[in-house]
Image 1 (cartoon, rainbow, N blue to C red):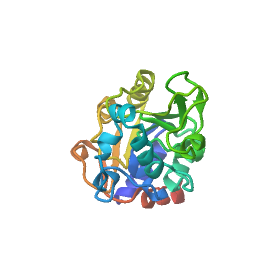
Image 2 (image 1 turned 180 degrees about the horizontal axis):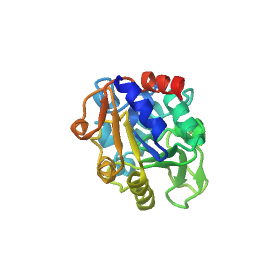
Image 3 (image 1 turned 90 degrees about the horizontal axis):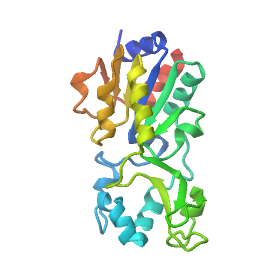
Image 4 (image 1 turned 90 degrees about the vertical axis):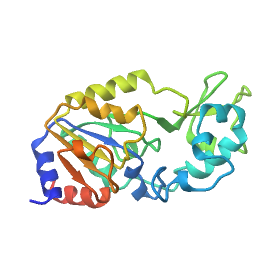
Length: 241
């Protein structure tokens, strides 16, 4: 039995699956990830992307922040891929109980998944930093320059920037779901972003599977490691399940 066949059998045998995903889940939709060789962090900008995506930079250089944000993080014209769709189907079949994602694109919900915990927020939620009024993503991405609220305040995307903490309730739910899982699937992530990556240590279930194009520091801790495209793997899952 090859690795993907083993993975599919474990899915069939499990009833409390949790999927923990990163940027690699959405690259096959056409989005760029951050840390791979073709990722955003290897492109050249006037400022390092990690500095641009910080709370300090947002507050002190909002014009440059939104130039980068609108150019690089706008998902209009992109859509969920096979991985998002198969995970949604597994949830409908009461196999998958939760998706814990580091992504901010909202593709899991677009694919039909209901129980999605967004560790780093979402581009689809935005609020005025002065009065708290909510705005959708179109009003931010199509704003002329810095998006401004009717009250005059700057509209901030509800994404977790560097120097900002994760939502404590989302973290609590993510850890609880990982603890309760019988199969943990980690996909499309280098597991280099903390504290999110540390949640993996709470898993006490039967099988820990990691699917990622490149090797990670967690490979030796897994029951099964598949260094391949998520799309290829989940295409086979779709065929069998």
